[in-house]
Length: 323
Image (cartoon, rainbow, N blue to C red; front, side, top):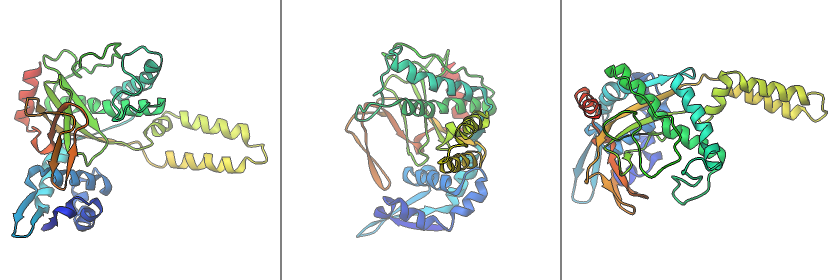
């Protein structure tokens, strides 16, 4: 089945969804891992980056048409997305290390025990609060947790992650301890993202797309029963108050919502790229993609997802080079 888009339509997410609404449930039945909303975002990225050549361009005298091949998308899901997706539970030891690391980071920043600042990695230098630093740290590093499992499950490689919070930020260290090359493992919870990135100093960039519940901290607390202790504590303290009913209703609502579904975190290891002069982009550069244009806001290496390497032979070469 072929679905034809104009350039204007490809710049409109709602229009893309409307045109794909018949095939999304079919793709969902194939993947069995992702929800339809998650799958749509991943497919949107695939179309805009033209991964697996899912888009064919046809030019006429008056306009350019973009023809999306649903069979190629199906093949991409079966051969690329599903085999490279891993699910982890709250009991995963590396995930728990990440949780503690992420909670420690804002305290370290606020106490001045790291050169990183509360405005680090924001586009406009805006000050971040404790919760934002925690969330940014967790999302930014969770890709490393998934990649560690990916390397072990698919290639039998044991890698060691760096959980040290350094006082220095002068140079970027490899995210993989004892690697001969500087490897940057980036994760994003924006499933429709089409760019893989790495710092200027990196030799390799790895991209992991993560499907993470927006209330992931609450679900972690629910899993270890800490949330229930807090809610029970509140109910016990206020239940005799005359005006307590509204608050108790909210307590019950939180409990029902947080415990309503299990914590499920999925990570898709998209692939890797080797940095070079051609991948180094500069602040202000404008990079085109199907349906739009992306403006670079800081100097770094960038490449589209369709240019990432991901075959078994590619990964074997990657591991030989870094160890």
